[in-house]
Length: 487
Image 1 (cartoon, rainbow, N blue to C red):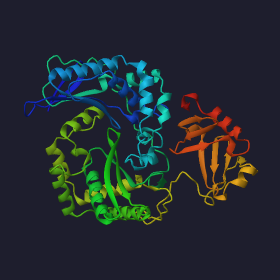
Image 2: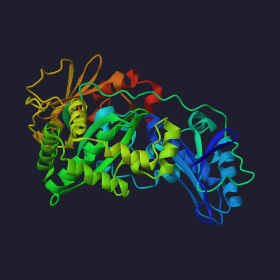
Image 3: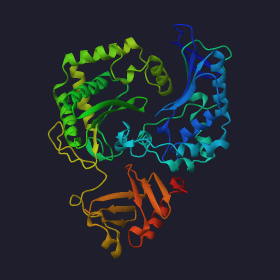
Image 4: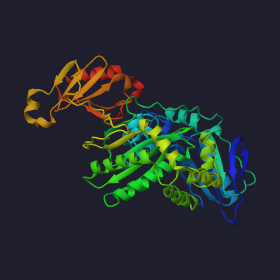
């Protein structure tokens, strides 16, 4: 792999094995995790604006937005590639903001993703509506709230020459120019995790059972542990579920690993118990050497679903963007081939206290930790009887509404100096803390609140007596930049 630069942009390239079209990928180390709840979708708007300038071309080209990288790709003659790259650079240097309304309208019309099945959905438990926890949030009305000034500011901070890498599958063409806007790489910090979530199980509005583990980005024992566990769970649930292994960058040194098991309807509890029991068994006894050898052979043949088994070019680009140590294929295989059963056990012993087991709503579990104590639950709702009722001003349903509402659907709100508590028909409680609110969406007289735990709670003044007082208290407490108003 060769390395050079053009106009201050790092260029990675390999000699072409055979004559043919040149493929170029201009990428920027930014994605949804660099957005906030109020600016959610801004990177996709920038992508749409830039690609609106590409026009019709006689060669393949396109763009792709991932969780942490946005890519602009073209394939053709050297002249085709240089022309496309020049167009992208000019568009980023002078964004066609007059197309913003058209782009946001087009994006709002696209079908929403199924967040309940997204492998990143369990990260809401760890981060709430921040950083990687934002990956699966999507609301069609959010695009319309993004102003040209917000779009311009985000592009100026994240889509600059200091945050760009060009990858080529042949030598750089003559006359290659990348006149991108000036700017250093963005300063990334480790995202904060939610307190009291590590070492727990939690219910979320998902269709999957997922185990979240954390590891060092170069820890081969961690990835081997995840893959051994996946194979064991696969064998245990092969008739009732299927599994997937995924990874997400927390920071340049740390990965969040997600082992997601997709159970058939009605099998969530059984699947969660199996996943947890297999995890404890692997932690206590470790894998057999034969299991590790089989995985090493799979990695060697590029059949193993390992984050590092991406193509060398992809690994090199990620390493460039996020300062991750780059390992070539031979070094990667050797690092995993030397993992021992004891190394896997040691990793899991240290990782389980920070893990989170996430299961679908309505799933009830009674699991044990490795030391035999009950695995704590960290649900956002506080069960009645396990916590004293929150004091404050109660806002109950008015008598007429109570008369026409089934008892199982009746509830009330409690207004406190620090926020609003939703209390359901079972007297369970959920907080809406003013100082942890990530976003408030005005929907006529009602409000949808994105809370600090990542739940979306709905408030309407007509639901309870004196409901306008609740809305007024919320509006007065939440800063204007956290408010979206839908048309």
